[in-house]
Every structure is written in C-alpha cells, then in structure tokens.
Image (cartoon, helix red, strand yellow):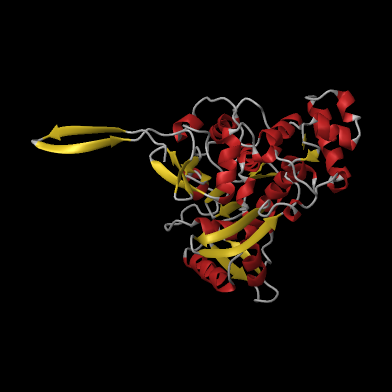
Length: 387
C-alpha cells in the first residue's frame, strides 16, 4: 500500500508490546481496489463522488469549476443574469463596464467557463432548473413535533442565487412562529433565530455544500429550535475550534463563492461565523451549536429561555399558577390575531391535528387563560385578563 510506518517495541509494567505509528497521508491509500483516507482519528472509505472530489482537491481543482458538457448558453436564464447584474451594481464590487457585457462574455469574466464549456457553478447559479443537471441541488424543509414526528414539509428548487430568499420566506410564513409584541400600536414580530444569523447560515450551506453528493440541504424546524444540515466538510486539518475562531476564507466551491461575493451576498474574509454569532448576541439569543461529521456539517439554533417562557402574552398570563407552554403560547398568539379562528383553521396554521388543538384549548381553559364566548358556530375565543 506504499505506507511507511514506525514499529516500536516498548515495555510497560514488565510487559512488552508493539506500537505501530501510522502518520496521516495526504493522499488516498488503495487496498484491494478500495481507497481509504484518514481524517483526524477516523478512517473514511472513498468511492464515487467522494473519491472524485478528493482527487480534484489534491490536483488543486474543484467540482464547481469542472466543465459540464451539454449545458449551453441557451440554458443560462436571462432573468437570472439580470438579477446578478442588479445585485452586483448595487454592491459596487464589479466594474460597471462588465455589467454591460453580453451573457456569454459575462460568463467568461465571472470565470464560469472551462475548456470551452460552461461549468457546474454556471449551471447552479444561472439555470432555472439545476435539478435537471445535478440531483439534490435543492433544499428540504420539515416541521417536526418530535424527532420522529414530521408534521409537514416543503422543497425549495431553482437557482442557488434565488433559493436563499425563497427559503427565508417559506420558513417565516409556514414553518416558524414569531413572537409578537407591541410598541405603542406598532406590532413587532421576532423569530427565535435572528434574521441576519439565519440568512448567513443558509448562505454558508448553499455556498459550501458538496453538490456532487446529490443530497439536498435539510432544514429541521421545531417549536423552539432549528437545524440546518448539508453535505460538506471542513478544510483539511480544521477542527470545530478552527471554525469558531478567526480564520481565513477557504470556500469549498470557489467559483460559487466568487459570484456570491460579487453579488454582495457574502464577504470574502471568512467572517460568516462571526456575523452569525454577532447577530445572536445582539438579539440576546444563544450562540449556535455546530456538529461536524465526516460527511456533513450541522448548525443548530436554539430559542433562548426568555424567548421560550416569556412572550408577548406575559401580561395575559399574569397570576396563572401553571406555566403556559410554548405550544399553548403559539395558539394564544393566533387567537390574538383573530379570536374567531376555528379548530380546523388553528390546526392548519400550526401544522397539528384538530385533536391536538382541542387538547391545548382544554389545557388553557383549565388554567383559566381561555374561554369561549357565544355558540360554537358564531361565537369567539376570549383570552381572560386581557383588557
């Protein structure tokens, strides 16, 4: 296997033993037709896309810069090109003369061509339907009551220039419940993940994902926490401490990162993690937690204790001896919006069953927080103690 190791005979407590020291090799090791690679203290088997990616990296190339035969200028969407030009002009990171170039010349200037072909990065950024060319180039979102109880889900497809705004819109409208408060007559909505932190985390996932894995980005949303997981890996010899401390920018997809930078979506100084942490600190939210696996990276945002227990309904629930749960607070928030909501409407908006709504309403009645005024068909809900 072309491995050179140190074999040492040692002695301890009157007993002899053999120590074999195997240094980490910078290349994959082949044994009986299978390639192996050491990452930290773990051994990984390389095959398929993983092996291809490993070989490209060692040659100084990247998957996003590989040519994609069959993808032509006609597959590059004019509206996406114009969207990039608008973003780039607003940010001022590209010479205005470049923005007046033709579609083909712009792709050249953005270094999205290779050996006479357009690259994988060009396809992901400027194709309306990247799934046609690369499986898994979309984002899955699911709402879970428990780890094993998926209530509903959605998928976000399209160019990775447009996915970011679509993901945030769907998360806010369908998957995350905002804390509602009032300043005078102005209604204030705040989610348990600060907008700036959420956006930066999603951009990191889209920019640094291993698209060759054919696995979509996955977002798991719960009542009080949220996970974003994507197939990716840290730069060689990095640890989670390296990630969380000051570091240089080392994007997994340099071509995609360059276009994101020129469009003003990201910075090029490796400060994305710092921006996420700063946004959480300014919002009074806990710092995110990272989990690093050999083939994927996951970030978790958790609602602060204050955000979970104390809501804009604090004054409503003053004097209640039993604590109102987060799920019950979300129900009360909807009833503040419209006290005529039916069981069916509440169940749809919260993504739970009517039986669950009935159970929560009964609990709130027992705690003396909620009561029904009028008939079941023409009446409305009234939150007690609310003036």
